[in-house]
Structure formats: structure tokens, C-alpha cells
Image 1: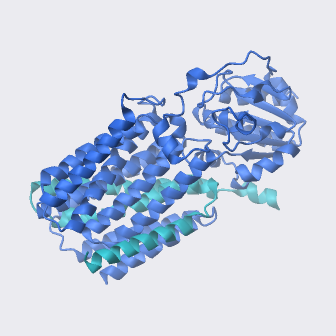
Image 2: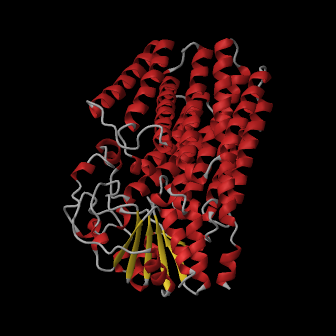
Image 3: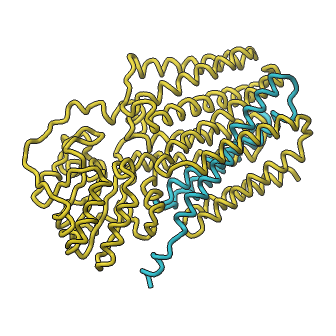
Length: 452
Length: 101
């Protein structure tokens, strides 16, 4: 009966994930997955001979309070940090489950169990410390720039080898100390592996850590011989893996390149600032261009999230729609700090999801677009990625905004983006530059609209 | 290897393929809720945490069990709640319907 109940939980997870695939069913899908989780928890509590109810109640209470508080209070702009933190807590849970098993059996396992205990400890710990470094970077506690450590990759390789060595020792000797040493070295490895990765690469890192938290759960499932954990973990591992690959593709970078190159700031010094003239625009110029357009495409970037401009943008769009202008949003896969982040921010500002277009949907439309309004995006609209083979971002898929009639760029200054590359788009005759903070700019354009 | 262990590997591999199949169709718009929802599912570790906390004996087991249950619960409760909060925003689309008709 217990096994069948776990199977039911696993089926509900799969159904829930499937329903998360469409905006109409997604919320119900999430509820169904949560129901599966509740079944798994209740069955476990009934089936196992629980003696320490106090410990469980205390843990569930504390965990629910912390998790619930964070989930209810978090700002949508801070979603990437929160997901990173949750990934981390899932990772450490797997490590702790394996450690509890080590305590129970004093490290005496058969070979196959030893191997999965080692994997559970190592993957869980790397996920935990890596996630919290990512959290620190996203929250601004640690600099978003890549921190290159002396001997970085060689040191990480050495640490990975040390974990393997300790794993073999632990398996052969059943030494409890060896298992604990694996945790220590893995925690260090997680920190050192994520520290050199730049802020702009966070979508890939978070996806990968998400995948690892799933794999860690599956390994913990092998340790305690529970198929619900194995299935749930494998599903999440696969989900994170797909997103990791997608994000890599969106940046035209391999996973190895993201993890090992310290991209996203390291080459910023190499940026050559062009001294070509740009068209400086006033809010009134922009208001006129927008008011007389038939179709406007808004291209939001991370700068929009930083400036908290999503509500102002929605207001501007309302204003334009009232004048009969067709407004859509073109969203690059790596526009935010995690996959789909920008979509959540715009959804929060009540933008209907059918106005949110992805890369493939929006690119064919730019040729028929009158005005493209770019707010806080840079590298994802840089034509060099398409035209200039010598460019560091050459080959990265971009939003081809330069095909539109007029391009308006709202930006604080001409400073280069995360890739540290000058953007020829800014110097095009059809481009208008509005130098300002994203939110202030949009608000002043709304003000100017009333005078048009 | 025991048959139980091999069965576990079979389940792991098949579930991985099911995951790839189910998730590859999710549109980019829903990637963030998908990730936080998947993240909540990875909190299934809570089952292991409950067993560790509920059946272990000794101080070390109690501390490890408590910490495991706490961190897994954060993951489960926080993950499902925040996913619901996000998806609620995606659902509210009165304007979209008006524009379509």
C-alpha cells in the first residue's frame, strides 16, 4: 500500500509538471503536485514507526514558517535569489538525510549504498553552497562580477578529485570521518565553482543548481531505498537540465564555457567606446514617435527589473492602447536573472501573457514594427552578435530590433552591457537614445504623451 | 548489485526520460514558475527527512533529523506557495480576453 501511495505521489508530480506547461492549467498543476507531496508525507508518517514526533513537528513548524514567510513576502524582482535559496535548502536536505543514515549505521554500508551516500553528500553539499553564493551575488551581497581566484579551475579540479578519493576511502573503510570530510570539501567546491561566474550568467547557473538539487534528492532516494524520491528527483533533474541547455543556447555558450570562463565582466576592460555621434532624444520626441506608431514592441531587459519600471511600462502601454497602438513585448530568454523572470515581472504588472512574445515569435515581426522601445536591455539587441564575426558575443541569438522603423533606447549612459561590448545599434541613424533611469524615463514619456 | 538497487536505477532512468519529455514543451513564459515548481518537487527529500527524524535515536540523529526536516520543509512549503503566487498573476487576464474578442 505504501509503495502504491508513493507511486500515486509520483504520478501526481508528473501530471502537475505537465500542466505547468500551459498558462491556463499551470496553477492547477502546481496544486496537483503539492497534493502529491502531501500524500507522500502523510503516508510516510503513517507507515514508519515514528517515535520522535517532537523533532518532526518542530522541524515542520520552523520550516513552514521560514518557507511561507519568504514565499509570501518576496518581491517578484527577487525571485531568482529566492529560487536559488530554495534550491540550496533542498540540496542540504539531501546531504542531511544521507548524514543521518551514516549516523544510524555508523558508516557500515554495502558498496552500492556507500556510492550513493557519497553522491548524495557531494551533490547535495555543492548544490547548497553553490546556491548560497548565487543567492549572495543576486542579492548584491557578493559582487556580481566574476571573482577569479588564483589557480581557480585547477584548484576546483583538485577538490573534485579529493572528493572522489575520499569517496573511495569511505566506501572501503566505512569511516564516518571520511564521509564528513566529503561534505566539507564539497561545500568548499560549491563556493569556489560559483564565485567566478558573472551575474549575467546566473540564468544558466540557477538552472544547473536546480537540476542538481533534483539529482541530489534522487541519490537520497537510493540511500533510503525510496522510489518516490528517485522519481521526483529524476523529474527535477531533467527539468533543470532542459532549462540549462536552453539558457546556454540563448547565449550561444556551452555549459563548460559558462562554468569555466568567468565571462560576464572579465573582459569588460577590453570594451572600445565608439566616439560616433548618437541621436539624443527628449521624452517629448519619444512620446511623439510612440503616439503616431501603429505597432510598438517593448524590449525589456534586466535594467527594467533593477529600475522597477514594469508598472510604469504597463501604464505607458495602456496609454498607447487607448490611442489604438498595438503593443507587444519581445522577451529574450536571458533577459532576466533566471529563465522566464521577465515574464513574471510583466505578469505582475498585469500584462496579458499573450502579449509576451519569445525570440522566435518576435523576430519576424520587427520588419513591420514602427517603434521598438528598449528598456534596460543591451547585449540581447546587439547586432554585432549577428554581423561581426570578431565580436565576443558573435553567434548569440538576438532580438533583431534593427529591422524596425525606429528604435528608442532607454539607458542610463552609453556604457557597455555585461559582455563589455560596444553596441552599434546605438549609433544607427534610426535609433533615438533617451539617457535616463528606466522608470523615470517611462514616467516622463507618459507625461509627455498627454501633451501630444 | 541487489535487484532492489537495479530496480531503482531503472526507475531513475525512466523517470528522467519522462521528465525530459514532459518539460521540453513548456513555453519560455512559464520557465520561472516551472523552475520553482520543480524545485518544490525536489523537496520530496522530506520523506527521507521524516524517516531520519522520526526513527533515529541519539542526539546526533535528532539534530540531523531536525535540520533535514526543516530545510526540506522550507523547500516544499516555500516552493509550492511562491509558484502559486506567480501563477496567480499569470491567470488574471481580463484584458486579454477583451482584446481577443
